Image (cartoon, rainbow, N blue to C red; front, top):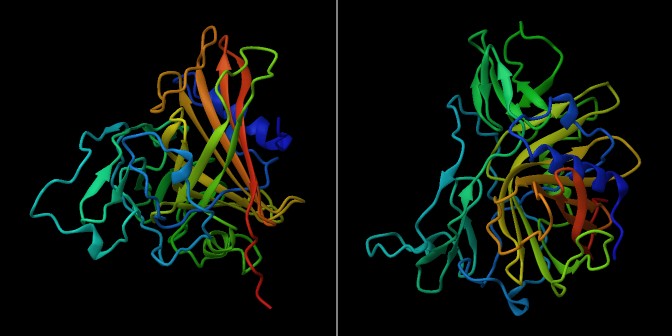
Length: 361
């Protein structure tokens, strides 16, 4: 069994524990200052498999390097309240009057639907085949001025000038006008705005420098666990991370500890059909520490999976997923389950290595 970084395992299990209750942890509980990482997104990348059937190993693509050519230059800051769960029922675009997906996409390309969990695959005839996941929001909510806001919801600040968002580590607000408390995260409005004193530490650099946002590799089930071991045969897994212009939060708990949290959509799929998940979550990249890496964490309650996986344990209460991508291209990810209400157990791991992003001379 492959070993994951301890900080990554701890953060994933904490996330899994948080998903077992409707009472979300406080903002301070979610900051996870011990983890030096965050995964970053990419635009849709090629995939020839249909989303309505389990992937087979032959359809898993080679590792693809990240690209943000379609990422907007400025973060899309909206003052509208986001919704909670969204149900997508359509599976095929059969409207003969619809514009062919080949106008803007290539055959096999996965196109975000825009609901933070579903994608449509562009077919060679110009039609699309779409996933039909029910999008769920499991990140902690935020309270502001007596109103509770779900994760990633943006809303006006009480000063009538600034905009706030419910980010991964709590409330984050713009700094357009003076008057808001200086503590808390900053809602950044441009990919090129630095976080902290280093002018090169920007959201654009975080997205550009990640070794990959489309990861494929062997997924090994933990069949030797002391409690509720897995029985499935090892398979192939795929992780895709997509940035669609969501919020960018700059956290500076102290001058020498800047970090970005970037709203993303993540797909986590296995070729055996056990996992077929679309996750509305965040990517974290610290601008400090000994580990130069990107980190992703997400969680689901029991019964919230779209794949066929069954925890087969007593009193199952939730699942979590984590991934760490080191600058040298090493990828470590794990999937976890919580049994007997509060016992965190590893389901399996995906580890691989991708070519590192070349550094500028």
